[in-house]
Length: 398
Ligand SMILES: [Zn+2]
Image 1 (cartoon, rainbow, N blue to C red):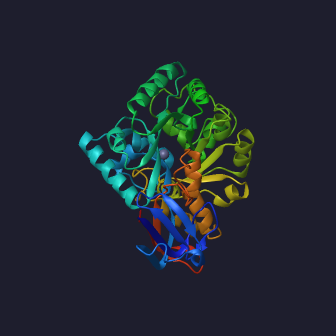
Image 2: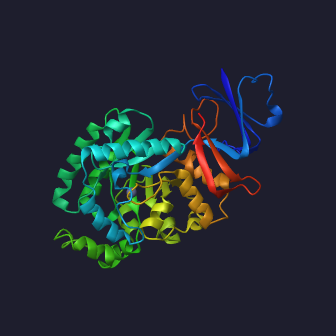
Image 3: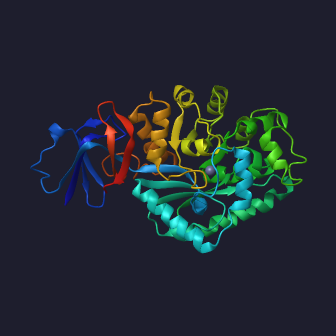
């Protein structure tokens, strides 16, 4: 039996939006066709037409490109609006909890993501905590096994730890080894990650320019981030600044031909974007605006990324720095801050761009024949101006 869905607008994402379009799918969610209303004949598909005409739009399932499922138990634990250095200090001391607490929180977080129309997740992993949840395959996961160690002679040990962790993720989604952030990895560790990623053509991710003092640290060996990191002991005693911004200092140690996801980019400038695009043609930029507001009360300058033709993805980050695990809530924040960005563009960031980055675009990311992308209804949209409203909400129909 075929199922048909219609709403005020259908956004296939791979093609322009269709006013009162119709999506036809098999019961398992496989897209059979997307039609303009005049081409749709009720006679052929009379059995089960689902109308969602109440200021609603239909779009494919969302890709949450940056999450830390294993930190879900930290919901409501940290104060907002402090700064990244403060946040890091709290995270180091505060992430421990009982196994059952961690497990229950991850299951609830996954339930929430499913309810919010998310179908795939790029998830940062420092532990094996999330493996049992992911093995149930309710969502598609790419696991970024995250490495960090600043001491050059510990690089081999940290790398081996990462390999061992990767093996534990068998059956829980795809994996790759990835660096945490410019300020927590040594050149030696980056070299190992480079070689491992290069031969496997694996995707990479790194937290980027989430605080202004990250740049100051690399340029001058000063600033609040450097001070915070130095306060934990002697680790940063021999750390040398490069004299360049943090992105240039780090990206040059990563392979040009591997897709690389730069996450946050709150303090990235036009110069940084130009530099990154000249360095590699497969740079992707992930925005997690609600986490940026939570941690630093600052948002990236979205327009400069658009002006430079950047490929943009959307992440929720973790419950440690967000009240929601909802891609739509991130889009609403961006739209509120920058009303010039079209709904169509926002939806592409949240669906097809992520599916392409993770190589899930044969099945996910757009309403195209043969894909199984999920069918999401976003209701309470301003369908005259094609903008989200404060009360816009997502629901998975199939
Ligand atoms: Zn993160």
